[in-house]
Image (cartoon, rainbow, N blue to C red; front, side):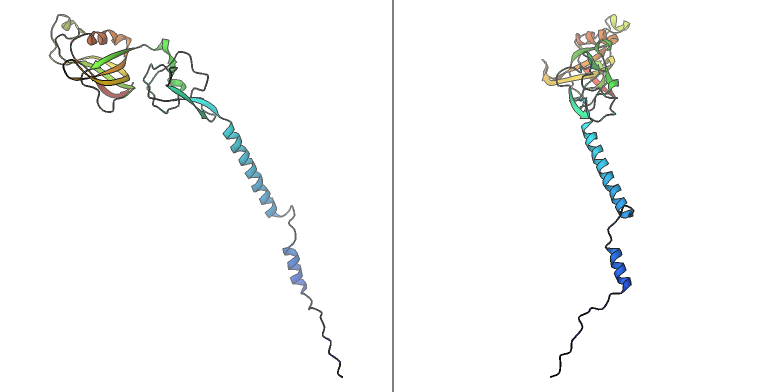
Length: 234
C-alpha cells in the first residue's frame, strides 16, 4: 500500500511590508493625532456656542411697545396704549418696564407696533397743546389718521370768525379762510349727519396754545369747518 501523501497546512507567510501597513492602519489615535485635536476643537466650539445661545435667550428685558397709533400729547399711561414685550439687551434707547413716568405723554407721532423710544416721551406739564373736538363738514381725506398734521379752514357762512382787524369791522370774507395751522389729529370719530342733511365728522385735534383762541372762535361761528392735511406728521 502506498502511504498517503501528507500535505502541509502551513500558510504562506505574509509579507513584512503588508503586515506593517495593517498595523499602522489600525493603530489607535493618540493625542498627537491632528484628527483627534480637530475633533476636540469642534466639540468644544459646539458646547460654547450652545451655552452662549442659552444665555442670550435668558438674558432679556421687557420694553414698552405701542398697541395703536398715537399723536403728540397722547397720555401713554392710559389703558390700551402700551404693552410689554421681551427684548435683548442693548435697547437703552427704549423705555423699559417700570421706568415710564406717571404723567408720560408722547412728544411726537408714533405708530402701532413701534417700540417706545425714550426720546419720544415727555411730561404732560411740558406739553403746550390743548385737545379740541371739531365737527368738520366734509370728513377727512382718505389716508388721514392719528398723528397727521392739519390746517383748520372755515367756509363762508352767516357769520365768519373774527381773526383779523379787517374782519373785526364785520366785513364778510370773500371766500374760505385759514384759521390755524400746525394742528395734529389725535382721534377720529364716526361720520354723522348734520341738520341740513350733509355729512359731518367729529375729529379731535391738538391745538398749540397760541392758536387756541382762533380755533375756539371758529368752532363757535356759523361757517363750516374743514381740516386740510399738510402731508406731514405732527
